[in-house]
Image (tube, rainbow, N blue to C red; front, side, top):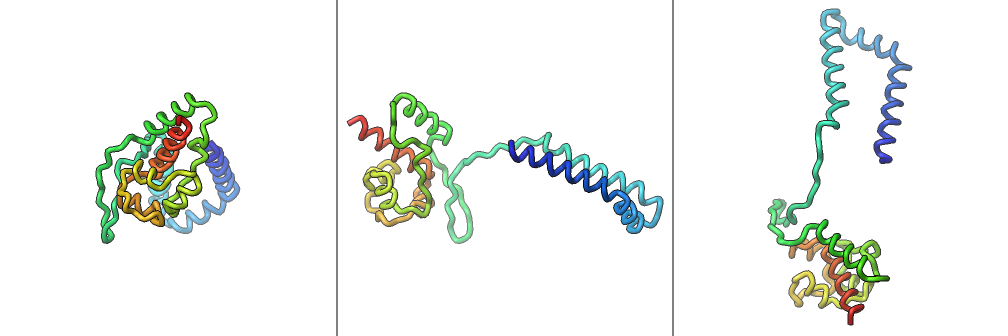
Length: 177
């Protein structure tokens, strides 16, 4: 919403700027386009392009979704098919868990994991065993705990949200015991 409001404010300032400098714009236009028979086509082309740019955002729809995990290899990107729930489905699962369990600690919003974090850092910060994280992400137990999540994500094709969900599952498991 703030972007829309700022866009309207900037558009208004642009219109005000053009109005205040209209004589200068006319003078420069006449200097650049000397021939009178070229002035009308240039004005019409400029107006056409301006109108297209103004109405273009109303005719497009942008749909952003993550469809696969990129695996980088020698500068080339290949896509690896990942058979996992979508982020929306996972968030619905966690929402239903959160609403069904009272005082569930920590909530999804409280769990922040980043690619630069190591398995050991995640385990220590959220009090979850490294072995539980590896099992939940379907990663071999031979992986070192000092390995960064970003490297593991590229190698094994999971999402950072998957790590959050494994932590959440561990908290639910411990709470249920």
